[in-house]
Amino acid sequence: MGTRPYHSPSVAQLTAYPNPAHTALHLSYEVAAGPAQLVAYDALGRQVHTQSLAAGAGEAVVPVQAWAEGPYLLTLVADGRVVARQRVAVVHP
Image (cartoon, rainbow, N blue to C red; front, side):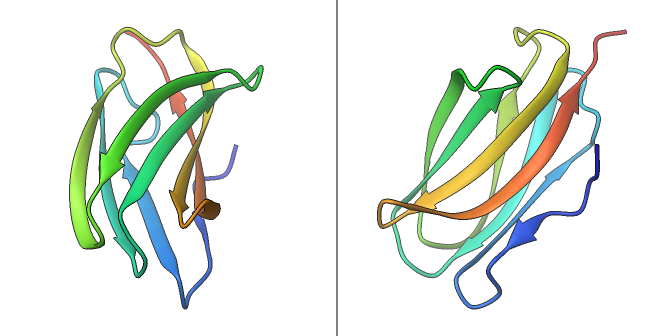
């Protein structure tokens, strides 16, 4: 699982850390069009989290302690389309 974020340079950027996460993911994002949503999917494609984000640059925290261990896909959605993605992992000590 890579940790390099995918983003469209002219539209948006999404970075999540730490990766792997234990209790929370810290997000740093930038989205030109807004408002935006963060949507997280598990390895089976099930949506496990949705969070509204303001337009522009910002930071957010996503609690993951209740998520099962494994890989997840974070997507940043603006204007009805995915503008950035990042794969993360959740592990519990």
